[in-house]
Image 1 (cartoon, rainbow, N blue to C red):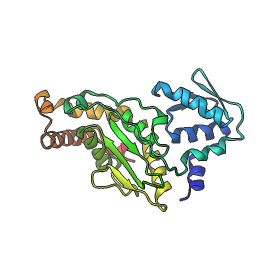
Image 2 (image 1 turned 90 degrees about the vertical axis):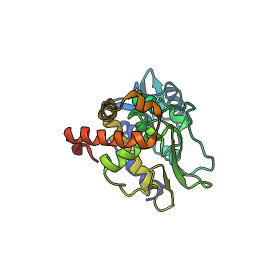
Image 3 (image 1 turned 60 degrees about the vertical axis):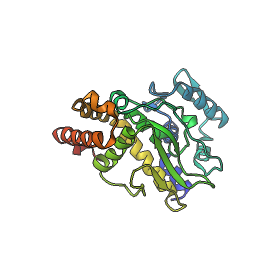
Length: 260
């Protein structure tokens, strides 16, 4: 898949408003759409409002008034393909807190990360992970002349373990993605690049739609793991308990219905 095909798929819509909504969502903005208007979600970082406002003005598309996007001209919407083209500079967002298993078990969702700080083709995926309670330290979409690896650094092993479990047991297959064995990186080639990005965007949409359920399962899984065990921070002790509890909870809730 080439960039033009990728952009055509993410920009499908019956009208200019729906088309813009789909493009901005793919870029990583958390938005609400009611078939007439696009609104910035309360789940967005406060800086997203300013970035989106400047973006729409730079492309002469419109403005943001309060939390509503006002389209003044749809003529330049197709120029937003430039957001997803290959770049030379590597940019990624970092968080700087290091917490253990006890913190991970109590944290309902991750931090709100500004869209502008995240690389275009992985932004929505990182935002969706955060909404599911998975905290990342840094990420890169691999869409660079100098770097062809998409990678994610998770804040603590608990976050990496939850990400791994979701792919292995809930998504249930790699969906054509060439993940490494830890599900932390994907080698990017000219052949698989935009197929990979489209799959991650679709996976991100599924994760975000199911974020409340995934948060609930995570919290329930830790109810059976005592605080003393969590605070010992021993991966080989906690991860098997976490996975075992998740298997039991999801089997009782008929979790298979939620697999992609």
